[in-house]
Amino acid sequence: MGSKKIIIIFSGYNDRAVISFIRTLEKNTIKYVVIAKGNEDFILSTRYKNRVAIVRVAQALTLVLLKEYIARIKDEFGVGRFFIAPSTEALNRFLLKFRSAIEKIGVTVPLVKESTYISVSDKKVFGVKCKNNNILTPKEYLSFSDVPLPFVAKPKEYVSLSGEIFTPFLIFNKEQKFKFSERCCLDDFYFQEYIDGKSIYLLYYFHKNGEVIKFSQENLMQQAGGGSMLAAVSSSYHETEESSKYESIFKAMGFHGLVMVEVRVTNRGDYMIEANPRFWGPSQLFVDSGINLFESFLFDYGFMPTPPGRPAPIYAKYFWFNGIESPNKNIEPPVFHEGCDEGLRKDPKSWIRYDVFNRPDTAEVLKREGDK
Image (tube, rainbow, N blue to C red):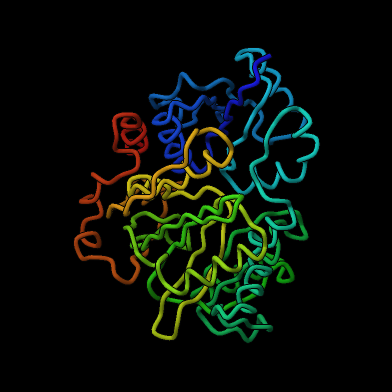
């Protein structure tokens, strides 16, 4: 059996990040296979459909199923070592939970230890850590009945007491507050003031040797309710003293890998909103800007013989037109953040040339999604 590793990508979730990662692999001629979510997976409408080794029938991932997938890929490709791309939160949590058993079948899990990962990903824990390191966090309210509007209800932990997984709820009026209280167990959440202002993503790759590669983006347009980013541009925020504070925190934790920190910049100061130690949707922006954090990640795990260069970033724009009505034909209009230009506000389609899927390898995806 061959000793070379092959990268396994689970597609069908976080599609924009997945396609940006695949483009990076193709550019560097790195061997990979895809496990598609099902017959409707976007990957089957791309140039990379021939890379699909398995089309999943069951959506829930179990250790038994993963072992079956690995065995099939081993037989077909003649490799004995595997590397799973950490593309989504759910996948990462699964890999960490069963890490020991997964590593025994020859799979590299490219993540920090579980306790470190959770201390970044769980919003409550990371917020406390930031507050203790002189980083502003939104004001917290102890009483749900007295919390002023608008506010944000954030899950204390990834999995609630009832076993459900929630994202934060942005609550702007009494009706939304009532519906939230009817839908959710209040003990699963904590409540913070809603922070408006300039929206920034700080993006990092922390090498195992402690070196950090960094980039940042200014978000201009977002799905309603705190959903996915729809438009963004390159930023220099990663060069600020605020960025240095986060770098110190992650290094003190012994963190390595990819991580994004969302920040809101206001006239009262810069507030940490949340952190995500995984792939994130607008990854094509850092790829196009020439600060390809995926390449640093791939070098760290032996897929590239030399580290990527560190050129000055190119100013770039990012757009996801189909997300304006995705995933469920959103009724609410998108949110335009501070700093968004009037051209984008008046005619979002004017940015279609920057669309993540408006490229030869994924043109069919753009057309297919637009026709729905």
